Length: 156
Image 1 (cartoon, helix red, strand yellow):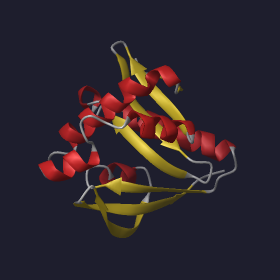
Image 2 (cartoon, rainbow, N blue to C red; image 1 turned 45 degrees about the vertical axis):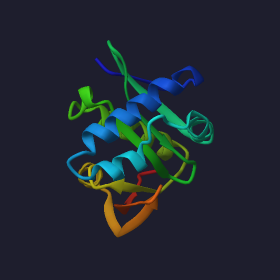
Image 3 (cartoon, rainbow, N blue to C red; image 1 turned 180 degrees about the vertical axis):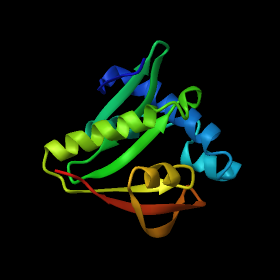
Image 4 (spheres, helix red, strand yellow; image 1 turned 90 degrees about the horizontal axis):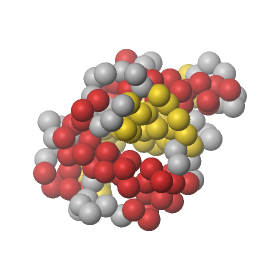
């Protein structure tokens, strides 16, 4: 059973560890070691993550073992993060999280959603009705990445 709840400051270290594990495990088929280390450095910068979570809306998915995913978004409809723990991949956690974000944004009257999806995530967002607007190449800590700007009309 998966429960969805709001982020709490006490979640910071657990969610950042979840993010790091997700990137290095689930992203490995799509990106090389240098890219993965640049995307999710070890150790992580917890202060940057704290600020990021505080500046957005974040929901956490939990199962009997604890947090198993999270999603965060801005008021303008931009979905900034969506990560699931490797142990929870392909179990519907991301679907539940994105649906909860879409519902909250719909209730707020937001009619267009957007995200910048990784090579690992874009097929998931496509199944949720997002369309690729354009591929992008970004550089983080000296490593270049391909990602996709995606948009979706949201029923507000």
